[in-house]
Image (tube, rainbow, N blue to C red; front, side):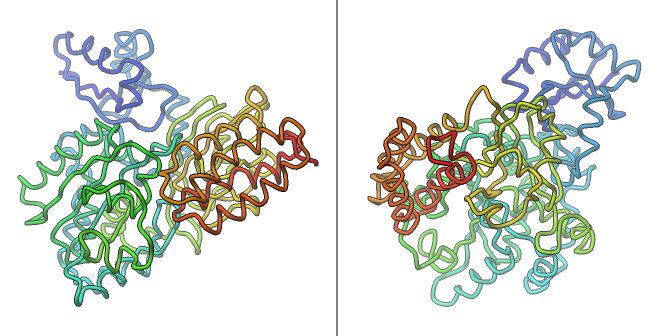
Length: 482
C-alpha cells in the first residue's frame, strides 16, 4: 500500500489541501495522512512519499501522485529546502503531527529524557553555555530570564510558565507553522522549561484565529499525558482575542486572569510577580522549540550555526513581492539579501518591511545587513520575531508607511495617551507630509519623541520605527526633503 503525506497546515488548507486529501482517499491501496506545512507556501499543498520525494499537488493531484510513484521529486522545492538550515523545521512536513509515534521515531522527547537526568542548576548552566536568546524579538538570554524567576520564588510562590503563541502581527507565521506541523516539539520544550523552573503548571496562549494550532496542541498535550511522558505537569491552553497588543507579555497575563487586555505597569516584572502574583516566565513558541535539540545534541552542536553573539537559527516569515513566499530557517548572521534571494526576490523590489508593523522599512541597497539581535540599522529596522514583507514599485514606500501607521494606530489598546492619541495624529501628519505641508515634519518629529519615550508598552514605543526608517531611507518617496 502506498503511503502519501499531504503537506498542508493552514497554508495548504487555504488553497484546497482538504480537497486533495478527499481525492486521494478515494483511491484503492493508498494510505493518506495530513502533515503540516514544510514552509513552502508558494507550492502548497505538496505531496510527499516515504523516500522524501515531493510533488506539488497543483490542479491535478492524481498526476502528482503518479510522479511520486515513479520516484520523481520537485527539483526546485528540493533545492529550496536544502538551502536552509532546518533544525526547528526538521520534522515539519515529514510526519503526521497527530502521531506521537511518528514524532518519537524522529527523535521527539530524547532531549527531555536527557534533561530528566539533570538538576535545575545543570539545565541553567547548559543554557548559559549555549547562548540561547529569546526568539520573540527582544533576544534576551533565556538563562537569565529563568534564573530571575527562580530567584523570586521566596515569598512569591513557585514559578509558572506562559507560552506566548499569540503571534498577532501581520506577515508572521513562525509559531503557527511549528504548532501545526510539529506540536510535540513545543510540548517537549515547555516540559524542559518547567523542569528547570520547578514549575507545575504551564499555559499556552494561542491566537484566537489559529484554530488548527490549538487543535494540534490539544491533541499533542493529550497524547503526551496519556503516554506518561510529562508526569504530573499541568498544561492549559488559553485563546487570545487576536489583537496585535495581545502579543505583549503583560497583556497576556491580564487576559489569562480574565481582565481587560491592556499592559501592566512595570516594575514589578513578570519574572518577579506575574501571573496570579507568582514569578512567571514568558517565552514564545520558537524559543522553547529550540530546547529539545539543544539538550539532545549538546551545546557544541547548537553553536555550530549562527554567530558568537547570537548562536543558532532563526525562522523567517517571507511574504510580499517574492516568487517563493513562505517560512525559511537560516542561521543567525545570514544577510537579508541571501534570505530574499532564496525566496526569489525580483529586480523591481524597492525594499522590505523588516520586523513587522513595529519594524522598519529597509531599502534594497541595505539588503547586505545581517540578521541579529537589536537594531539592524539606525532608522529603526529590527529583526523582531522574524517577519519580512517585500514591496516593489507597484506599492511605493509612502503607501507602505501609511498602511503601517494606520495599523499601529488602530491596534492601540487605548490605555495610555501617547499611543492612543499619538498614533492617530501620526497618521494625519504623514498624510500632510505627502500633501506638501512644510509644518508636518516638525509635528512628526515631536510625536516620535513623545511616543517612544512615554508609551506604556512596546506597541506605542515601537510604532514610530516605520516612520523613522522611512524618513531616513525613503525621504523623497514619503514627501520629506531629501
